[in-house]
Amino acid sequence: MKRPFAVGDLVSFQLTTGRASEGIVIHKIVEKRQPTIFLIECGDQRRAFRFEAELALLAPAEAPEAGAMRVSGFEPAMSVSASAPAFAAQGADD
Image (cartoon, rainbow, N blue to C red; front, top):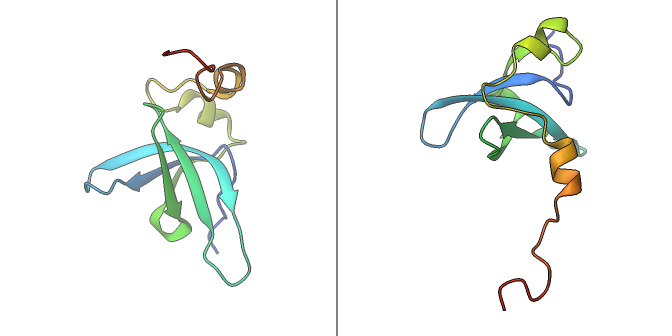
């Protein structure tokens, strides 16, 4: 049986253009009687939603090689995105 993907796993998938890409699972959406959907963040900060069947595991989150095998140019954006405002302040472009 295949191991289910977890948040933090490094996975590969195919973009809508057909090009192969890889990224880190940042969110998992599970609902009754529906296929599991994953939100993946790529190295260039783009995000994609993919079904579990469309993903291939490159390195699990808890594996020591997962840290060394990160996507080139990817820096965990948790501290950056948490500190940066999601929207510009009111009057920013007035």
